[in-house]
Image (tube, rainbow over all chains, first blue to last red):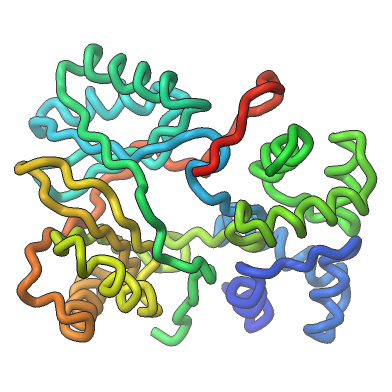
Length: 151
Length: 169
């Protein structure tokens, strides 16, 4: 069960987590509670998987190269091809989506040469074409995700 | 420009900040630098915009946001920056990207992501988006996510690749 403190920690610290020697203590001070209570609450949120981690979101294509990839796979072969794709360590966020292009994943590699060789390997192993849709421009200023706890 | 230590720092941070009193000191120990240097470097990476945000990364699904749609639009090139500017202002839009069109079979160039508690809510929000951004005559497709085969944060492995050049994007 989420307490008001949990909700505050979830909503207010997605963007600017304190960059001070004692970040949890700083949060505790601003919420009027103790550092131990903050640490306990974050541990609870992590244990219950409400948060995946306290970490950083990196801008794509500054460190290494990446691309979104889409494939159109017949339904009866989708799981097999998805498993082939997921097997590559360069792949993350591999999803089925409701469309004729039904398999969507993100590839990350250290340079374009590596990226292309992974895509080629996936195409050969699966027998299907992969459509590359690399990011050209990011219009979004990521302010985290505002939760609506009311309904 | 960022150096090898910055890259190591980003890699270590992929695992998440430790829930201890001095988490940055702990990272410093791992990289053999001081706590101060960790903080100074992270502050700089944020200012440079390479770290888009530093903080709590929430698990949408677990919090009840179980419906997720990627919506793609075929926006005339001369309008795309303007329209994207409007779209990205909406509070329920999580991502707004320009991508190359995939030929005749996939003519779309503007991508946005909407998370919602259920499908109806996401579709309502999409309707609102279409209305207020003037997109009713723009060709689009809505791709709800179905099965997740693999979900993991971006992993940047740098430890063994000291000499790789960082691209300018």
